[in-house]
Image 1 (cartoon, rainbow, N blue to C red):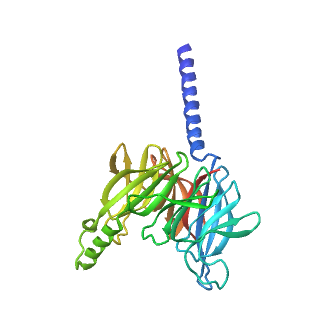
Image 2 (cartoon, rainbow, N blue to C red):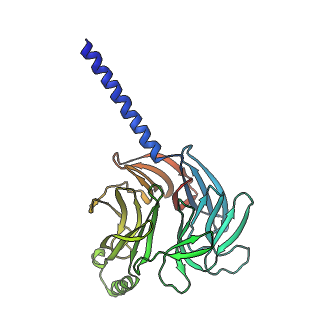
Length: 331
């Protein structure tokens, strides 16, 4: 009888341990120290014009707050919310009604004062922007006469801009892991891309898109840039990383609509089966993924369990809005 009671106690203790472990893992991933910042596009049904909506998502309370709406005039709908300073950094071309559009500008919008100011004027083709843990703004764009899109560090103290050189590569995709304060960039040679595209356009019968793959490089950046991996594919439009692994989606050749996912861990690349509705990867920690997925042509932000292969939580959904430039940010 005593042995049975001891066993029951052991089972109860083990059950409590695993429950607490699961709760702690969830807490680590959806920690109140982090929040989601994302941009959506909403189209006016009357005039067909688009507007950008900037959101703040409190992960601990699963609440989304719309902070700002502006007309869509930038090259790409990108921006990031700075909770500490209560302001939004975003890309825009037209600040005043009737103003002629030109290069992209980086705009700082003060959510308290409801005022905007241009802080960077000489960028173009801004593809994304991130708020680093130390408050530095990182912008993926072209600058001046540069032909390559690449990452730039913007220092608020002296308004200086410093480029992060990817060994001459064009920066095609990027992401930031605030847990480890680490960037991941995907790049390829623009010259090789154009050469292969010219060859592709001359072909009459395209059988295999993979015949037109080029070298794609994955770079990691904390204080210095490091080439992590290199392999042939068409491009890598989505990527995410934690401290142990990289998950990315790749497309072969040109104009391929098929996105195939792979996992890169311990220097080994392997196919990864994810839900077919997943369109973009926002953040990764252990077996928990935050991603953008589509259902009946409508997009939402969800938590996805890599082990169970299923969505476990809906974080944002609006049938009238498409999601862009979504990032996890440290408070």
